[in-house]
Length: 324
Image 1 (cartoon, helix red, strand yellow):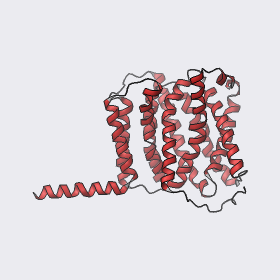
Image 2 (cartoon, one colour; image 1 turned 60 degrees about the vertical axis):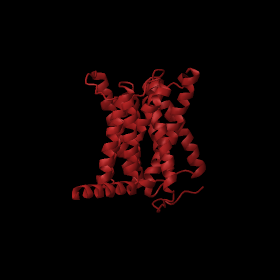
Image 3 (cartoon, rainbow, N blue to C red; image 1 turned 45 degrees about the horizontal axis):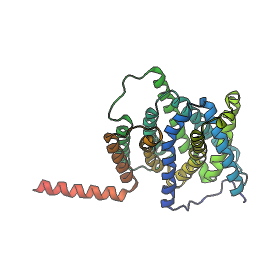
Image 4 (spheres, rainbow, N blue to C red; image 1 turned 90 degrees about the vertical axis):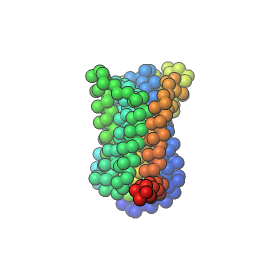
């Protein structure tokens, strides 16, 4: 299939319901990927785990790109932009995810991921120039509070070791790089498909990571995994990276980084909810309440008609009670 001319306009025809459905699947995959990755890191060195799964996912995406669109073509200016977002999303973030997760708790990772949409909305507003209604800031903060109720279990751990703090900082830097890249790549999506941008960025980023970690990458470790862990590895190798990254970029391209970021607040909640089935952890009442708050905040932020209807209802009730 021939490629569209470089710098040619590109139409966005995907229906919103389809974009939100695929984005919802991505969020579920990313949510359960946190505890799954934590389990698998007990069998791998961090970069061995990350690079091997990136290699497998990149091969899948490369085949899909060549079959669907052919070899992508980028101008010199496009390569400069692509190099920057590759460094942020497919090098720095990928390193930070595993290096931070191996040092800290999965719950702390979920907290940091939960706060990332707030910064994504700010970047989309002030860097990407996307309009963000004021009420969405309120709903987003409310959603983050709900997430904190889930992942903190109603308590605050004030006695963290230096190792855990270091892991938290690494994860925060990594998720900031991811958010910056998500906003920055929007200009490339004006002339190139998300598949072309995502795959090319992953190919370059994976090659860089493989070269710098060549001595630590051993694919034989995958074959030595127990049966259940082997299946978990296949899931985390293909779903969060190949499936997740592509459809995340596709969603950002169609509905914007701010709207996608608001929905992404559900990923860490799903990660905690899935932990009883993955790691045998208990789900407390306060976590259930926090989940309900987060879902409500995300729903109200997504559907402004519901939000405005509630505002009108409570405004009328207030005026009626004031007159009485």
